[in-house]
Image 1 (tube, helix red, strand yellow):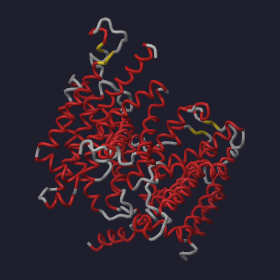
Image 2 (image 1 turned 90 degrees about the vertical axis):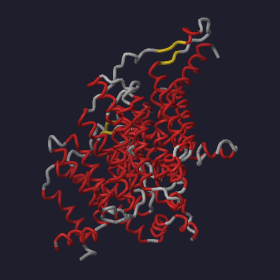
Image 3 (image 1 turned 90 degrees about the horizontal axis):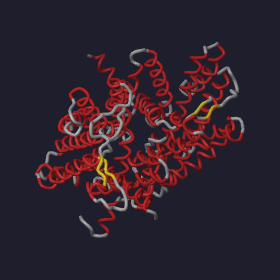
Image 4 (image 1 turned 30 degrees about the vertical axis):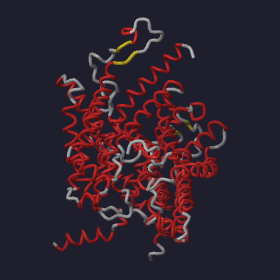
Length: 309
Length: 312
């Protein structure tokens, strides 16, 4: 392997890890909702799109930095999630019907409405937030003068990645150390037992949906300095989040993080070595391979190796 | 009277072109019938067998591209696509079934959704075979007039309707319903659930593929974004069935009439045109909350609701 090839490979893996960190944040929200409510939220990507438009609007009208708008987008999305869960999803869970998948179809409807409303309000043009640091990067040669290979790390990518890590750490603290977090995890493990232990399960559901939405809203704010924004961007991110949850193991937060990293790296490798257009196919090959070979997700492998819980 | 109703409706429909409908109305009719075929196919798998698919665009697209590629690469008439697509789509459905039918409920739904997206991306990127985003154009239209297209799709719809009615009335249909109601119970009663689910998937896929092959011949142009569309095909077919009535014979037909007319109506109002997906989404939400089994499926509930209002 020549040094140029090595450079390309390392560069690809680095950008894969950064992408994977952001994907993980996206998937944690979905896996939380899936664990507690046992439904798949197909409006997940559209909620992220809402978060991105909030960041975009704040940037273009009030010149708020996208990274700061996390503090606004996350609470707004929390509220939106609570409203959706309380007034739309909860009533449907009680309705008698032939098909139990009604809730999933309902979230598709919600996603359609959100995406279309975004088209009406913001038009279907491609948008971006032209931040001053968009093209800034760190170079390896700046730190190590005689390095044989040259690597660069984009500034917005690395900041987004670090914030994603920070949010994940805070979430981990919340879920393992606080009463509310423990109640959410108890509800996810066993609904009835949690109810018997005096946990308000309905309230936990509402809070979880809000929490999942605010996580994905935050992810949206982290994505916007990097990606172009358009109203239909949500669909692909719903699929990404879902692929990661299947890969990682349903309802598992650790699985979502590992799965996100694997998917990010794999996708980045396909984009470099097969072709840009094929990157999404790589993602689905992982999905199908996970279904066939590790149906329980990465978490089940961990359990087999007695690694972690 | 009730036994004669289907025959009367078919006869009335068959007479329609004779009274001289204009091309636009005939087009709406053809599209409505095409959607009711796809709806019936989805209903066989989703409504009767309980396997909700979010990826029927995959089968539609494979059928459409079979026709398109036969014409474009081999120089055959696109109509050959209809018989050929039966084989192609059935084989394809077997592969999909092998992968996706090990999943249950919502996970099957998402597995099929992923399949639909994979195919769209593949068709966009395999430019050597599918011409990618340029799409395939059928340059010689068989008929300028739409009358014959109408009769072909009407015949197909009648055949599909009879086929589904026969299947659901037979032992196979009872197996499907048993799988929908409780897969484990069905398995313990000795029903090979994977085998029968695969049959349901293949039948449903083949019917959808036929509609796709017809679409190529009729519209004369296909591209990946149209025939593998997630929202415009996979989701719309679910809406057709949900609105009309899940697990009913007439549901998909009523549903497709409502959906196609609604879509045309919304598009014809200038300001509302951009919001048609919002209105579709709202309709879907309202239907799921208030009439979860669709208009036909919830007729008793509808009657009760209306009767209740009258008594007030």
